Length: 264
Ligand code: HPA
Image 1: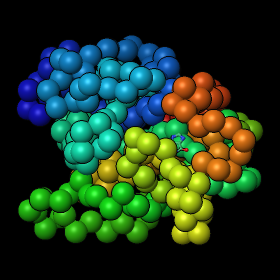
Image 2 (image 1 turned 90 degrees about the vertical axis):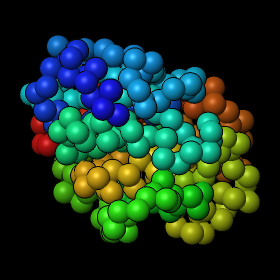
Image 3 (image 1 turned 90 degrees about the horizontal axis):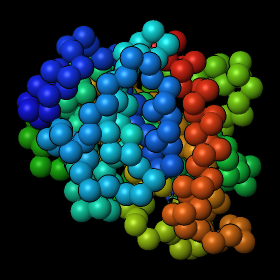
């Protein structure tokens, strides 16, 4: 982590970063929004996401958006890549060391709600950790007992709804359930998730939210809906479909996030 921190400060200067944004599957082009941008490949940053999943970028971008200094990770690591739920911890700790107080997370997700359709955005209000794994297992500090009430910052959520209404972007809100993947869910698992009160399903984000709250960051997360959950529609769920449909959500996020940055 210290090495990555040094590399970033050498290349991007040591002015504090206001917020960090992680881009989900098919959403990496949202990185275009930064001005005065510095690009650092993850390969040059110890502890940052290695390997990778198609549809994800492999770079850290640091630049300006709406008068704020923002760090963007154009991709993330998923638990299903190696079985390490804490894989994003070094990157998040580095961003926190750089001054980040707010963590913005995006993902692609399946909808469990007939009223939330592919191409739409769903702001996450809460989650269900159905994978049953926790990135803080093994952590010794007392802070490991993280309070997860209002983990998804209520003020930021209210600000997001106001911004979305102003921009005329339809924005739903709901509970995200984490399945480990990489296989998609069965129709029976989707029915179970609906019964449990979830509105969207995905394979990421939850570990980062837990880590972010552990570090005392203000957390915000938004899903770009790419498909209906397994068995809910006559469609063939695939990663290709996720990447293809994500562009619609990406277009909306590219309008929403800069406006939200003004409120941060
Ligand atoms: N399930 C899990 N993860 C996903 C889905 C899904 O249906 N769509 C996009 N990511």
